[in-house]
Image (cartoon, rainbow, N blue to C red; front, side):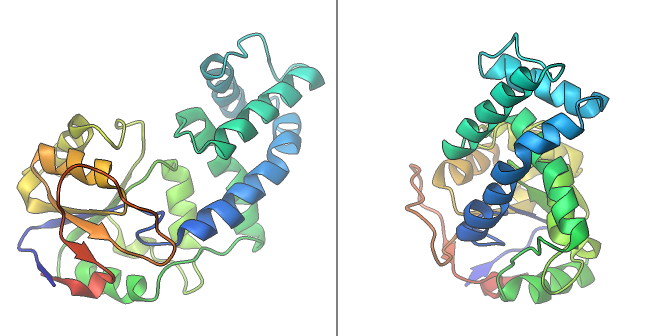
Length: 237
């Protein structure tokens, strides 16, 4: 049991609200399957062009553009390589979010959340807590994820979303920036994640922390000790 008397709760997604296997075996697989066609079909979209250019610069493919089939293929392969290595790339996450939109809107993708998540998010929101998400996935992808779960739209329980445009998840400055955006002192916010180095950074910034122990999670790593939980219902507010 974790007793928390603050005003805000900040949640990771993968390994915390949803299983790692869903993210890797379903979402990443969908993005890998569709990235090539998506880049070709949307090569004139300015948003896609900007994300592709940023991806090209990041992966050493600076001369690859969507103007040619060869360039689109190189960029698709670069994106797949990043996914295979689980690199937290902002332009990759932007492209993934746009690809997943079609899957969620068609019904081909339905988000997995752990059984305790819907009722707990509703309880926290009803009690006045400010609940937000901080994930390496893009904000667009987060909103799609939580609006297309197997139990319906959960976004009505969430007041905000943050991604790596705020800053890396393993740096304390990112959590200070989030606290400032939430108009709270860091100590008033509880951050829940399955990654020790993320929790270490949040603790360094002054936040309360909790380690999510979910089925399929890996060794969390990190340097500091964090109280653990297997269900959000263990958080007493």
